[in-house]
Amino acid sequence: MSPGGAAPHEHAGSLHAVDAEQALQNARDVYARRNEGVSIWVVRSSDVVASAPSEKGPLFDPANDKVYRHPTFFDVPDEVGHM
Amino acid sequence: MSAAAPSPAIAEFALRMGDSCLILGHRNSEWCGHSPALEEDIALANTALDLIGQTQLWLELACEAEGAGRRPDDLAFLRDVSGYRNLLLVEQPNGDFGRTLMRQYLFDAWHLPMLKALMGSADSRIAAIAEKASKEVAYHLGRSADLVVRLGDGTKESHTRMQAAVDFLWPYTGEMFIADAVDEDLAASGLAPQPESLRDAWREHVTHTLADATLKAPEKSYAQKGGRRGVHSEHLGFVLAEMQFLQRAYPGARW
Image 1: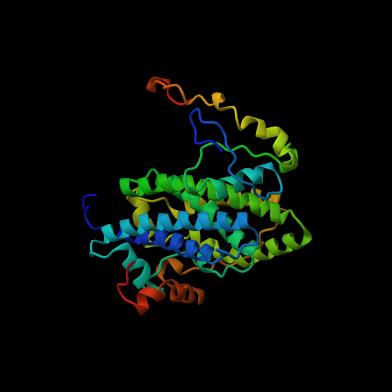
Image 2: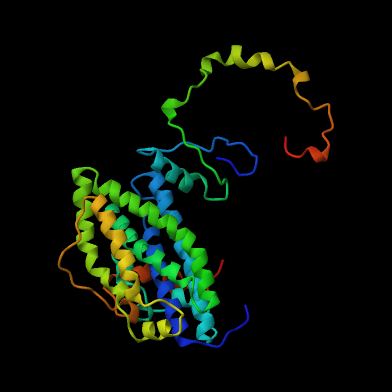
């Protein structure tokens, strides 16, 4: 789901449907009731490649102590807008 | 909105539109929490809420055109069966989910061309309501037509149920296209279309959809009518008994 403009699509949720067209309709009805978005992508869950929870440590723990990767030391000028 | 001059014809028309939306919205809301799948449950509740929202607009217009100081809530909760002006189609019991969907479809296929025609109404208030509602109803029609095809052309069980739904509901569709003196008056003033003028668009849509759904409309049928002049089937009283209970038991209750 994307709220529009340059904002990226983000995961809204999962649902059941018999095909892609019905999935779009159901997504509209279930996840776009409160102006959450103006664009919907649907993907079959079987087409999603996911990382394994058991590999969480090796995959993600190394990022824990790399504080320098968070650009919180910079003042971003207002003119830059959405980043 | 500035108070326009009272118009009995506009008040009656707004009641007819509003009451059909209200009763169908209420019927759909009876499924809330009981639909066969979560997705259908929410979608049907969305439809119900759209219709109740449209009811609010039509009944506001009815009150304004009546000019008697009544409010939309008075109309919804304090009129008895004979005061209601909805189509008989929308008050029919939900039956199974197939019948509920078929009723929605047969109504939507009339509702959308009606609203499109009303967008050109000589009364700007009618045109504005139609403009807003037509977007919602375009979605209702797309969805209900899609489900009618899927279930009609689905399993043997779903096909049988959908065919039974067409057979049961068909006699209640003729009423949508029959004019009375109010309709003649409205059409002559350019306020609303002749009911008969919507029949071709409805018939074409329904014929296509039923063909895709491998369903057949009854060849011979009788048009049940009376809803729009307050003569209803036995079912509407039960709808109102539930819908109006609170205001009847506790007059003026608010939250």
